[in-house]
Image (cartoon, rainbow, N blue to C red; front, side, top):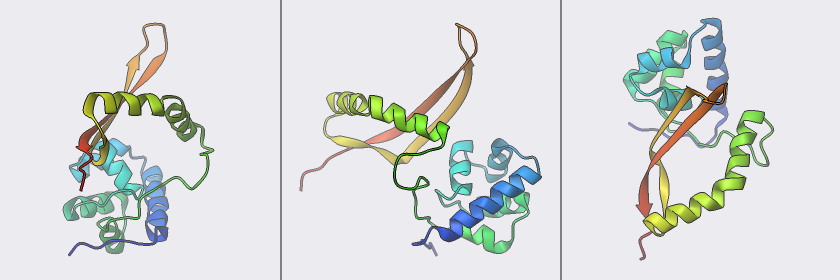
Length: 156
């Protein structure tokens, strides 16, 4: 049976314990994703409390991290999503994404609507990828791909 949470506290505590175990075992997010059988972005989000894992994946991740059966069960519950508390984020990395949306949010909206019409880009039917590439001018660049299904607004 599928279960949902209405209080994020348990998943937040589990995320803290999981990250602690990841650190103590010197694991990468990719290694955790490998045992889950899912993408690194989805697995990381799930361990951090933003997605539910399928039963087999939850059990494999819990075993790798040395977490108990209760943790494996909790990893399977549908969470109360949203990992950033209200207000402007203070973490510099998260703030930069906020800043990008402040600067380019209306541009993205205008371009999406011009090309697709009235609707949204799904964050449920969604893929995320992060890559590090060389910058031709020196240093490195981050290439972040947000790939969501377009869902048109349907009048009723």
